[in-house]
Every structure is written in C-alpha cells, then in structure tokens.
Image (cartoon, rainbow, N blue to C red; front, side):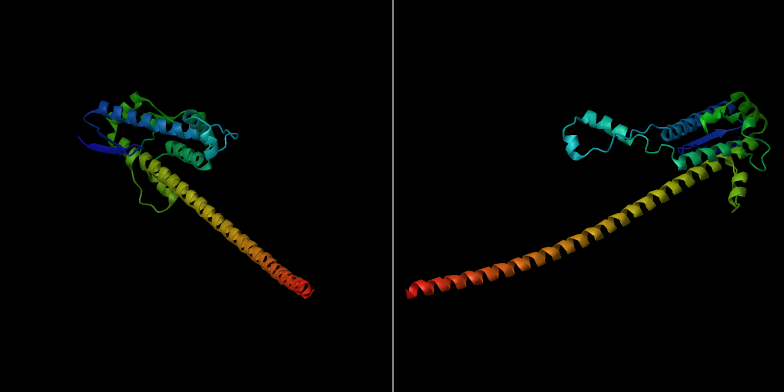
Length: 247
C-alpha cells in the first residue's frame, strides 16, 4: 500500500495507508477535523470576546491592597476583548472558509464529495465530516483524495496558486499569511511606540533644558542681589563703625 502524510494545524503528522486500512485513515482525518474545529472555535471566541472597558490595568499601588485571586480576576477582565472584532482573524476565517468550497484544479473531487463541508455561516470556518462519504471516496479514488489535501502549486500568481493548491497547502498559506501580518503590525506598533517615546524624551529634555536655563538665570540674579546686599551691608557697617568710632 501507499503511505500518505498530512499535517494538521498543530504541525502533527497525519499518516495513513489508504488502500490497506481505510478505518485508520478515517479515524485520523476525523481527529484532524476535531483539532481543526477546536482551533477555529478559539479564534471565533477571541473576536467575539466581551470587552470590559471599566477594567483598566492595575497599578502597583492598587495591587498592594488586593489579594492574588482578586488581581487575577481583575486582569482577566482587563485583558478580555483585546482581539474583539480583530480584522486579521476575521479575514483569516473568511480565507479558510473560501479554501473549503473552492475546488482544487486538476482534481476530480471536492471536499464536499468526500464528506467534508462547512457548517452554518455562524459557525465560521468550522467543518463537518460525513464518514460514510469519506469511506466511499477512499475506497474508490484514494489518489484523488490525497491530491485534494496535499496537491502543491508552483505558480507565482497568488490566485492561480490558491486554485491549484490542496486544502492543507491553502491552510498553511493562510495561517502563515496571518502570522506574518500580525508580526508586521506588532513591529509597526512597537516602532511607533519607540518613536513616540523618543519624541517624549526629546520634549522632556527640551523642557529640562529650558527649566535649567530659567533656574540658572534666576539664581544668577539672586546671587547678584545677595552680592549687592552684602556690599551695602558692609558699607553700612563701615559707616556705623566710623561714625560711632569718631564720637
């Protein structure tokens, strides 16, 4: 028999002997579907997570008056909704759903033909598996089933490459694209924060310099006044000494 190897979304290998053990193949694909749906569910939960705007990050002083359990509960609320309606995740889910129903060029089967379909639109990109249809497809056309999952494209055109790629290849490209985008956004945000911090430092340094200059002028004038006062005091002392001494 021929051994086929797939990778699920956690990079775990899913190997199976198509023409030797159909039951084992169905079990592994079923396990992949479960893991895949679990991941999709987590992503959907994140973009639908409630935002608690009244829960601001705690200061060290506030934490001193709270128990560890209270701090944990507070911070859980404060962190909730950080990815609410995140455009990157929403776009990723749309791309994955499209990967499900777009036929793979050159393969005589679609995912729906082998029993893998998307659910209701509210379920996002989650999928369902009809094991009976999958069994039939594996028994009658194992090579097409394999191509449906693993076919690769050498095209440099993104649209053409998408259409020619198998489901696993499409998934991999979608997740890599999201990761790259998220990294780029994070780096851009970090660069903006660094630039903003530098601007604040420059402003602060200018204020410190201006303040120092103002204080220098103030104390310089004060020293001049004190010197003048000391001079007058010495003159008066000399005057009184001379006056009283002569009398």
